[in-house]
Image (cartoon, rainbow, N blue to C red; front, side):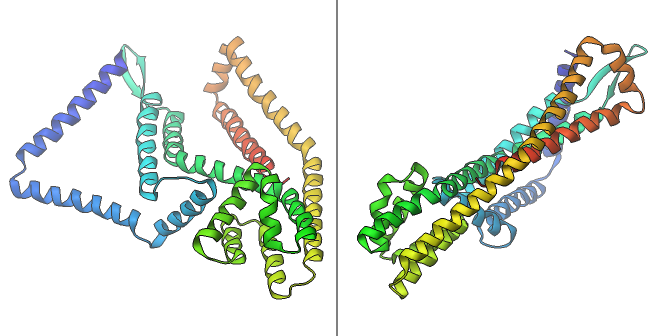
Length: 322
């Protein structure tokens, strides 16, 4: 209740201050202020819409992700959603990690806790980049699925090429038997070839650059070689599938070697966090003494850093190619 009253006092005071300042401004000052605000808003829109600088790089990254995952919104709308998430995250973190009121000598003293400031900053930043995080999660999961299905898809194309002796026709004949993500990708390629009038190899090259998957660039090289020389395409396809299979086996071997280490790290971190929680629940007084000692903050910081490192390593392990 005290905290709510404090928020209301702050809010009313700031609102009254804004009203008083605005009231005493003359018409000329109000126009200058309006022009300044309009100028800053227009500049922000200009930076979002103009192709140049860091915003251009963000736009290029967004367009790449957008085409791969099939997103249907504009870049400006996406950036506005980031701003909305930023504002909401800041408001939620402000009320969740705001000043704590403690009673010292019967006086209410506001104490700003270090972890509250850190929590507010982290949640606000995470909230601002949440749309980017979600977009990248979908993008990388789609790329990983396509990369995982490449061997199966190119084997189908190879089998159909042996029958048709035409790499483009063999590709179209193989689409229906491909897994979902790969089938969707080749349907997009087929639609682009039919609608734009571009050659199959040109469209395939554009999608290979878009996906940034080595196997697709190798497949493009096979298609170009078949178009230029007209021979040895079957041998090239065999080499391509053998290369992908060898890479998958090597990646699988690395993951199998790393799996025990990752498991031990997860167990160690879990025990450390669980021990901290159990001690806090069943032995609060010793934990309170530990927190007040000089080693208390270091102990909590060590747990936080260990969890962050463990999550980062786990994400890296899970994102490795199969």
